[in-house]
Image 1: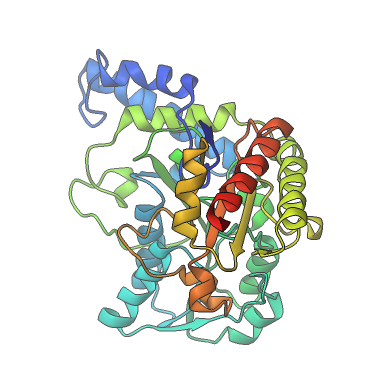
Image 2 (image 1 turned 180 degrees about the horizontal axis):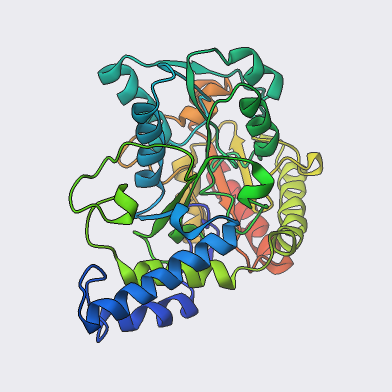
Length: 379
């Protein structure tokens, strides 16, 4: 099987699993306990927190371990907006992950917030000037992603954050699809909140973190014993925190990963567009420098996307139609609809997402399988 759905999830790294194993077996102590077993667990948790903090360029006390990206988004967006009385206005984008959009809808429905959605170009890009125009004296938060998980658009987060800072507005970025691919050092970006999901870079599903600036207040969304500096109650998952930290440690520098994957993905995109006139690339062109190094997404006019996926799987290539997080939904991607792609064309979408092991052979195999699949469907 050629697995090309790394944007949905990645295999767990052996190093991360090995590091987590003791805390699933003999080192089972609760890190809140003051006896020896608990103190050993706390020491491991402290190590994981400092390792993640160093990787992001922040302080350990600014790292909050969560169950993944969705929980971290909820804590960042709801928590910041409910704890900061500046106003009830939020700026975001219609291309954000479902976890972000659902938080915004919640705040609108139950707390009377107003949300301004920034205009997006046909390739998914958003101009910083549009953010500047949208900011108001009552703006409480700007939340814009670092990389789009469906169409692969990369966003100039540092530029956006600088604009928000001019107005004194906190900036949150969902960096789930960016870790290991682009530079997300917090000091470079200038953001006040940033979240990661471990299963996107080799840690187990159910692991994640939120960086939250110590200068920023936030209302917890899980109340209880006050763990995670009071922001996220509940007994911490030491094993998954350790695995997350080790997975981050074992990632190559983003410029190395990006350069290796970018050439493979660009060659694949070129081959698809050259061989299939009905294919349309969604998101930016590879040469723009604004495309995720490992995501190639297309629509195929006249074909059914789900049928094409089945044909590809029969040929040994596994990919997807877009986000894996809209569970059970048969509606077209909200991302593609926001780009004003018509309803029927949205249903033809297919996304190929390479991993850190991307190579020319994978690109060639995927292109051959796609060609065969389209030929079979045309008969």
